[in-house]
Length: 451
Image (tube, rainbow, N blue to C red; front, top):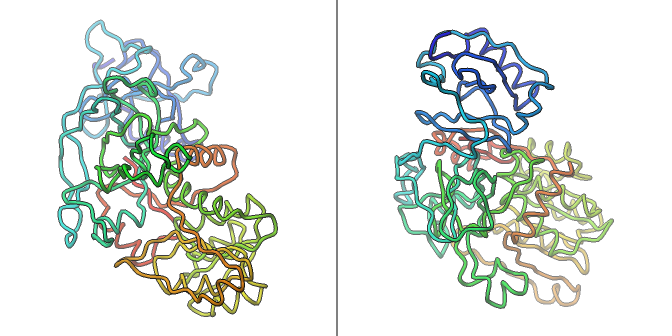
């Protein structure tokens, strides 16, 4: 056998079909490039890596892993893989004379010193793809290698400097990051190497103030926000305090976990603070990245759901996800349509348009609750009719993301099969095109950058 081998072209085609049909796959072999060890080396773009897999190294930036179920390998269905001399087009790895790979190591990664990142350099310019130094975790922090990161509308607001409190360029956006812990800072005991974790909007809270102690850490005045006040997950690596790196359960893929880390936990919290009761009518204004999950959480607690949007394809998605009613606000007055159903007990606003907030309030029935989640640009204001609000007992609630416990609940619900994530896959190189697509309304729900 040659010192370096890779799969033949026909084998690669078969691998791609197998991955498409079955998802993460495991390969075993008895010789060749791995000199008698059981794992097979593979081309970087052709395999999905499972959440429990063991990283052995990253020669030339290409990860080499062993399936977490290696002990069961011989009892699994195996795939006969033809091999050919290695070449630059496919990933190959030479074991060296008389050497074999260690299959019980937690990590043997070749330490990288630079990483690709999407950087905001100016609020009026596109993001720049730059090579930056890989950050070092400080005391109490962990270094996370990104596997996936969702694109949130907040990232776009951050990149454009839309809000009164602005981030300071240059910075790396992103707060729906999922990745593997590769390095521990001094004193870290909460997380271990190889843990798969989420980097959320709430990147740090003090843990001591009345808000943190009272279960409202998202209101902490000392909080730091990923991708806004500190660099976020639009990069191959990011650092985060270990206590705020939320574990991702094995039953949740990294691709799904990314949108759940913000879109999921934000809308879960909105439904939670609205205290939705079974059979109450819940109107979701804006059925997109957040709204498609808000509909599902409202249904989980027994709400009768109404999806409101101006894009027909998003309303079709809402129907597929179980919405009881949909309203195209571009063709029909949503206030009249919802009042014809008896009015909304709860209206959740996820569209960053001040007019929508007024429509949502007007759609409420007596005793209704308006939940404000979206943040329009330019510090927009909401004008409330005092007479209507008082006499009809209406309530206005501001809801800002969710806590670490809320995120754990969101992951648990998804692992139990209660929610579905709708997303489009992109690469980080496509970040500016992706932002344009979101602003044009061309994306039904979420975009996820896969690394």
